[in-house]
Length: 215
Image 1 (cartoon, rainbow, N blue to C red):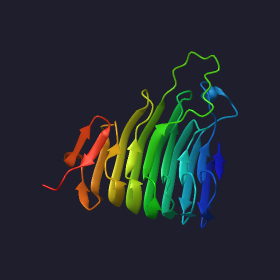
Image 2 (tube, one colour):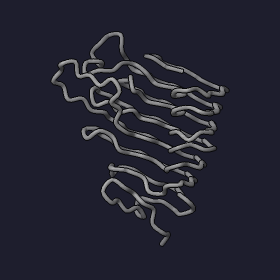
Image 3 (cartoon, rainbow, N blue to C red):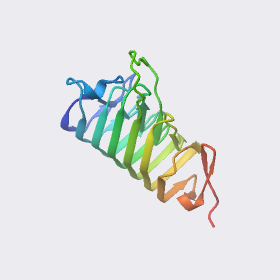
Image 4 (tube, rainbow, N blue to C red):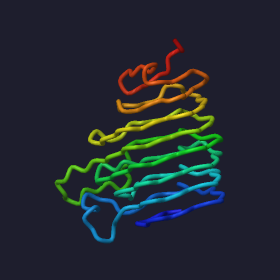
């Protein structure tokens, strides 16, 4: 399902299994996308009581999206090896992804959240702009999942990332360490492979964060 330049959208009581991303926020791409009248924001989306089978990602921000605001995913299930929440960060597009809430999700996924560069069809179209993404106010709470890897937080060099909170998360992961290059990531009552994971108990080794043993 592609949600393209829409406001006040509800997706409820669905089963989604496709050879693509499951639910995607759209709205434009390219260095001048934010200036074009046919493009625009996605606002006030509610996704609830949805089960995601085989998908490339359950809920995706981008790759063709300039602004997604107030997106809520709650009371959902995942049954795949791909990201629950995926941010496709285009180095040729100004993007703002903010006020996104994931709440009460169970099952099996590849990662809880992946934030990484996306260069498919990269095209600056001769522009001298230097686009970057802003990702802020992301809350992931009441999640109990089996994962391949807890999370990947590793966007483009110019991306500005702030206030990502994991709260009441119980996860197991085949790979316990996860790439993270942002300081404003908070953990509240989070366990990874049975070990409490908190900001004060995390060691950042370059781009990798690993949980320490409890004090």
